[in-house]
Structure formats: structure tokens, C-alpha cells
Length: 126
Image 1: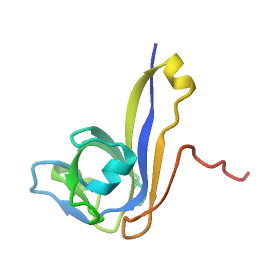
Image 2: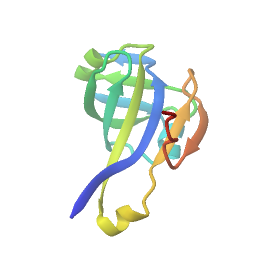
Image 3: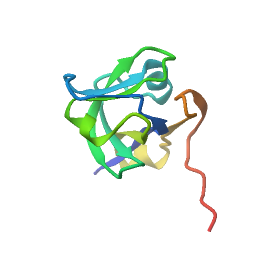
């Protein structure tokens, strides 16, 4: 059996551009792609914290260190500059692989610069 698990996420990134008349996809700072392990052209899910929109597109490499998060094409209707988004990629693993698997979690500041990474989501206080 294959399980679909979180591969990586970039948590609470700020959208810097929304380009409706671009071919499509989401341009992400290349440094954040490298740190997260998200590959260029990989399918990503984007969750808009501000509006609740959830949509699927693919990642393209933005300039390293630029902080760019540009939502392009039709997806530009789902996010505007200044919106906070969570960008996720998923991976299919069998049960044996999944038993020891940990995702890569990338946390950024308001300028989309790395603050820290983690391999697990901290427990929430009750």
C-alpha cells in the first residue's frame, strides 16, 4: 500500500506577486526550494491563510535569496500580494518507508527569509 505523506512545507510565506497573465505556476525563491527539497516543476498545494483558498499548481525556481513567492496564471485569483500561504509538497511512500519518514518543514519571516527548519510539527498546547 502507498501512503501519501507530507514531503515538505514552507510555512506562512508572504505572497510577493500575483501575475494573472503569466503562463502559470508559482515562482518560489530558489534557496527555499533547495532547503525544502521541493523540486522545480514539482506539484505543490498552496493553502491561503488569509482567504482559505486551497489550490494546486507547480513550483518554478525564483531568484535565490529574493524572497519571491509569485502566484501566477489562474491561481493568481486565489492569492494576492501580502497574503500568507502554506506551500506543501507530498510524497508516496510504502508503509515501511513511512514508518521512519520525517518531512522537511521550512519556516520564514515576513520577507520570506529562512528563520529555521524542523523535521516535525511542534505539539500544540491544549
